[in-house]
Image (cartoon, rainbow, N blue to C red; front, side, top):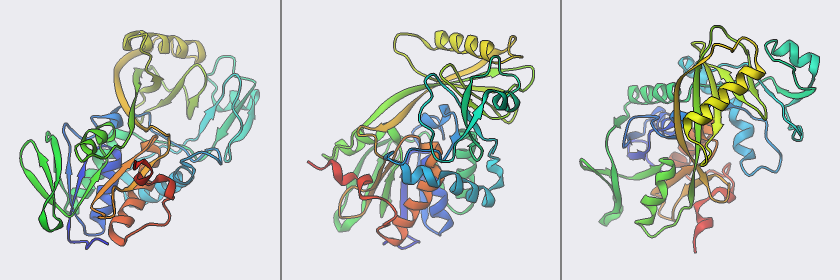
Length: 346
C-alpha cells in the first residue's frame, strides 16, 4: 500500500498514462509523468476514439469493456472539458457478426432514418445507443492538465534509458536528462514496455499493430453517429471533419489506403463527392501477445507496475480508476488474475 505523499513515476503520456496520472493526483499522490516525445504522440494520437461497452461475454477484456461507458460518463461529470460525443454507433457487415449485449437490431428503413446520407443502406445493422466518441489526443491533454493542476509534473522530450533498483528499496528512473527517484514506477508506454522490462530480464510480450487515422474535410456533416461497416469506419469530429479508421496493410502505402478509403466513403455516403484528405497518421497500437490486458505489479515488491491493452482509449477511464486504487490501497480484487503480468514468468 502506497502512502499518498510518496513518489510515483509514470512512463508514457498517452491516454492510459494521463488517466492514471489524473486519478492518482486526485488522491494526493506525488506524480511525475515522463514522455519521450509529446503527449499523445504515439498510438493515442492515431486513435479513432470509439467508446463502447458492447462486447462478447467471453472476451478477455469483458470486465474492462463493460465498465467503459459508465466510467467515462462519470469522469466527464468531473471534467466536462472532455466533451464526449454520446451519439451511439451503427455496425453492419456481410456477414453480420453475432449480436452483442447492448446492441439492438435495425432494419433497412430504420438505418435510413438514422443515417439519411447512406446510399443503399444495408438490410440489417446493429445500433448501440450509449456509445460515444472522444478526441483521444485532446482528452489526453485535458487529463494531463488536470493532473498538473493537482500537483503532478510532466516531463516531455525525455527518454527513459533504463530502470534501476537501489539499496533500501528505492527505485530510479534513468532518463536522457536525469535520474528520478521513485517509490513506484508505472509503465504505460505501450510498445516500448518490452524494451524496458527486458533490461530487467523480464519478458512482457507486447506486439505493435499499426493502424491509420484519416481526417477528411467535408462540406457539411453526413453522419450523426459512429458508422462502422465492412467498407468503412467513420465519425465526425467536433469541428465537423470526418474521421476514418483503417488497418495498415504492408502491401500498400498510406496514400493508397487513404485513396481507397475516400472512394469507399464517396460510394457509401451522399454529400461526400468533394471531400479531401486533410491529415493522416499511423499509430502503433500495443496489443499483448495473448490478447489479454496486462495490469499489475511485475513482482512481489509491488514497485513496478504494468498497464497495457487494446483498445486503450475505450478503457482508459476504467483502467485509471482501477490502477490508482491498487497503487494506493493495495491488491485490487476487481482486476482478474488472468490480467496479471505473473502469467509470463518462465
